[in-house]
Length: 410
Ligand code: FES
Ligand code: FE
Image (cartoon, rainbow, N blue to C red; front, side, top):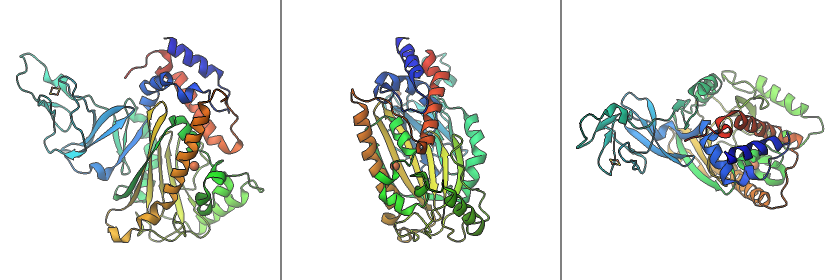
């Protein structure tokens, strides 16, 4: 109780439009309350569908310190469970695999079907209702080739998001893609420092010369342009009218008004894709018939992002793993029917690999400073409005949610 009232006091002290007080970035107690409350209610991008495509395939992934099994059952439906045996709690699976009949706990061989229901156990006393002994489920949902899971998330939230995200993901061929490359960037910093960084481009010119050399948009979102960005707006409108694929279901990307969105804009400077020279790195994906030089962004804040160029897409998984630890995992997708020889992996991963490596460095430097006794919150600039909005939504969420009222639980 002392913890939650302390958190309530910290929330009350926050100045809107300023970065947070130190404990929000460093405190194990606050992270523990978040993990059991607000963070448990968020959705996480756990996999691409190709990782768990056939009936009987399953993957083991960690969310907020909880090991989960995501399995495709015999009907083709995705199921999610805690990786915790209902006998005496052993871990059941250690790694991804395939099990046509389901799972067997290695400890005393209790077994479960792919839909998580109890299957068999030796020497059970009479009168035990085995219908009560299925694996504990977590919500999972596949949408446009992406596998989302949560510990306590509301499926209605994803259903509301689906009409916005799914048509564009399908247009880009994400469900028919395969993973051509994956890289992990474990960051020694609280998840809020990672997300604050991810949502602003104020740091782009000081930190990301490669990104700024590729993305014309950086000249607008990375500094205050002399013309207020009108020239870029005109450029985007002209591109959308004259060059963009007219059959795309996506419109021009909105200016981050909501916690989720999907939309397109041009890379600019005559680039066909997000490579160093702008030339293709793989054959076209999805329904695109020609290179139109656009990039589509899909967001479901706080942790789910996909960027789709014409010939590849990048899946951003952001997973809080501790008070001062966050995993960032990038996966590059190409059309599944494309051979390895047709994909230039090094040129494909270049932009986001170099940019995310730079972000890891600047976020960890940020975290080091925030740990100092001299740290005090500072004002967000006008180029950090999406960051300020996310922080505002977080404060509202933890104030309204159970992580602060004392009802926090698993
Ligand atoms: Fe799993 Fe005993 S703990 S069978
Ligand atoms: Fe960055």
